[in-house]
Length: 406
Image (cartoon, rainbow, N blue to C red; front, top):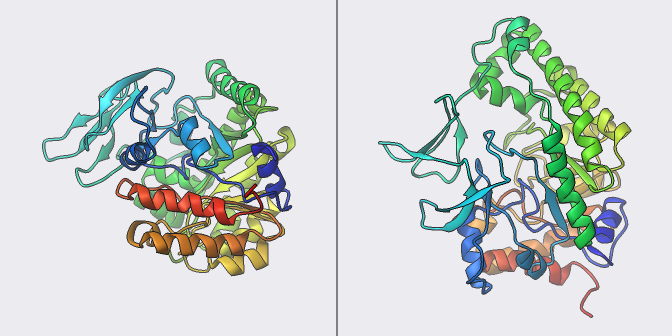
């Protein structure tokens, strides 16, 4: 089978020749740069152009074709032009990262060292927008443009930029190249967050208080947000039509132990706005609808299916109520599980190579029957995971994933 045929067959709840594999194919199944550099060295890539650091917030490496092929990847990503902090990824420069990793970074990426340690990123107007601790491996936003919003007029006064023709052409060119030169399945990352956008635009604590104490403002914000997403989709969807197999949206709805908001609040405030956005995608695109949501989201998986979600990621199997066997039994005929292939909180960073291999075998055996499964780990592989575990992760998935020995 071709890579694309394999992925589409799994999404259609049929068993392909083997379980499809997502090798670092998007922003929640990626590999942080130091771990990727070590993996690269381990498999023998010593010369040639350095790899690219494309996701600045999470410090993720762009997987090279040589490694995608080595680890039997079946999926590639169509990038947005400015995936994090408004920094374009269409021009590159060399940089040495704080741990000594040599790579290419976006031309306008200029982290500033902080006197107390760590680094900051600044907008062109001098506003600090993100900060990385010296002990941390990623940037966290520190600027929240709606933190002081009090009225509907404050919400409307925010700049709601709509995607332009330049970005649409950037995305389209990627899709056409992958279609022309390869047979990979393609995932186009849109965004489209509703609840999670409140955290980024107000700040998490501030937004949680607004949800409790200022429902009218929150509803105004959610309505404006949904309208903005649809305005962007009117440009984005034509750009990816015919060259993207999957459109990915995101909205982190869960914590380790529960939903972020109650099921009642979710159904009253978040679900109706998600439904508007997802309905627009389903009516104006032939691509499959993919939702990334971390955490203990089992109580609303039925709601997500109802509003059109076909694929769920990252399948956080260590969160409350997210036991793999239960998920497969209850939702396996209606959802494709994209992830859940190895626990990245415990097994991958702290277990042995044998532990990783055993967990991958068990989870592939659980999720594979009847299709509806694309293998990848639960979320990104962090900087301190050694290459031998990453190799074990993907090689085991390939070895036990189907009838492909010939």
